[in-house]
Structure formats: C-alpha cells, structure tokens
Amino acid sequence: MKKAVYKTNINCGNCLSTVTPFLNDLKKVSEWSVDLASKDRLLTVKAENINSDLVVKAVEQAGFKAEKKKSVLGKLF
Image 1 (cartoon, rainbow, N blue to C red):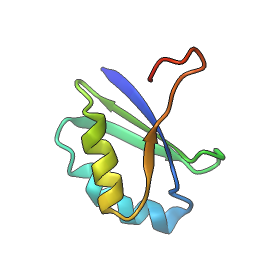
Image 2: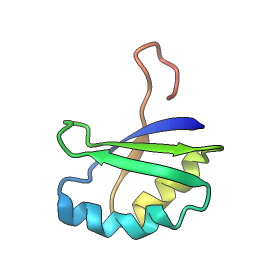
Image 3: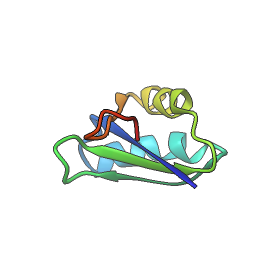
C-alpha cells in the first residue's frame, strides 16, 4: 500500500462533504482522509498504485485545490 499527501484548501466539514463523492469515486483508492486541524489541510490518500493526477483532478472537480506535498528530504510522499 502506498501513501500520498496533498496540500489542499478543504477548510471545513461542508467542504469535506462536497469532496467526498469525488474521492470515493477513485477506484484504486482504498482510504483517504483530510486533516482539517493542519494549516495545510493535508489530504492523505492510500492505494496500491496512486495516480496523483487523478487525485488532484478529483479534488479540483469538487471545486478545491490540491498540490502534491514534498517530504522534508525533498522527495514526494
């Protein structure tokens, strides 16, 4: 299972409700969550094979922004 982390502008429970059907429609994603307490509103996605473009597109279709987060070492999550 791989994990990817994205910085988003998903700010509240209503925003989360809006994006939920878009992320749930991603077939290969087994689990996802948004940390609303984080200043970067981090979206964590777990899947066997993560297509970051599809994740970003799903979030954008819901009306929000998502950007792949880099780790402290400069590598992508």
